[in-house]
Length: 198
Length: 198
DNA sequence: TACGATTGTGAATCAGGATTCACGCCCCCG
DNA sequence: CGGGGGCGTGAATCCTGATTCACAATCGTA
Image 1 (tube, rainbow over the protein chains, first blue to last red):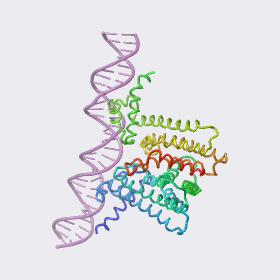
Image 2: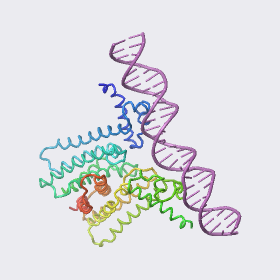
Image 3: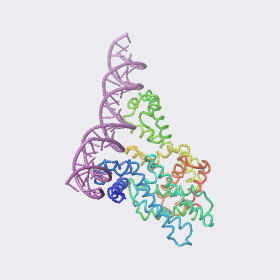
Image 4: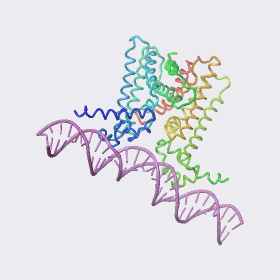
């Protein structure tokens, strides 16, 4: 109903918040900054969201959904007889590529602490990420393509490992920045080996 | 000089801060809370540190130094002819065991965002952690014990992977908590495989 | 013992950021 | 054309937490 009329400003606020988080994390996304970037006054935010937290939760959900969908569809587009190691490689490479394109945002989604309500969302999505990968690992083990292993643990380690390799040493404006391709290649090897597919 | 007389309260403040961070992260370590736990008034903190930030930096340094030393000495205590994969396994197992004993603290040291000045410290120590591991990987490759690989990337992924596997799925009071031994075992396998030592 | 330095106190002050609110504007329905 | 409702404004207000400061208490030393 009113949703359509609401959309423009509402959407602009969400978009502004995402941009700010991408640039400087949650800390940079103050109500005033968000409103300013969206071209409205601070008070306007409260016409569309009951609180800043609510805005964050909504943003969080939409971004995470998009990521999970991207990883899933990457896996689904592979040939049905692709080896499980290849599937896992692809899923995590998708994760990594997308995270790398938006390292600060990725960090905010995966790890950066926030208000408890937003954090609760994170927990749910983190499980989705890890579950997606754990499933692949279990399937690979069941099919005899991968050695026996603690699938949940490995899945967490893979998500964390890729995340750290991406946002950790790279995000601060430290020394030589490896190219994206180089990192992705390295991570593919990492994933393949970590699941025992040499 | 005065250092000796200063020590008691100063040390108590540092200790209190560490405890609070261990329990609830930086957020829980407010000046009032730290002072209260140390059994002094808030203002007293400023007799010993020029700011809260300074206290954090000092705490950060001392804890990180201890960790790095523990990992190093674990490696040094191994027989000189131990395989590099075993060395890496040991170093990371040490890291993991210690992190697991204090997951919240580990998280605070490795990843939790803080004021820029403290964050600068983190950067330095993070490099020490990763460098320690990268060195081992490079040595293993040079000795022909490990396959060719991007040592820095793998080191970061290992630190991140172990960190996530430890604090990520475990710290929130989620479902079934795997035992510490189980996690360490899983991580040893993970490390060994990730560096290509089957 | 008197004095200055060092510590400790905790209420007051400050600062940054979220939230509210009294006030216009405009559009749509009657 | 008049009135109500949704939208936007931005200064005022509130909250939370760091920092200051005027005032003891204590201790070492002259």
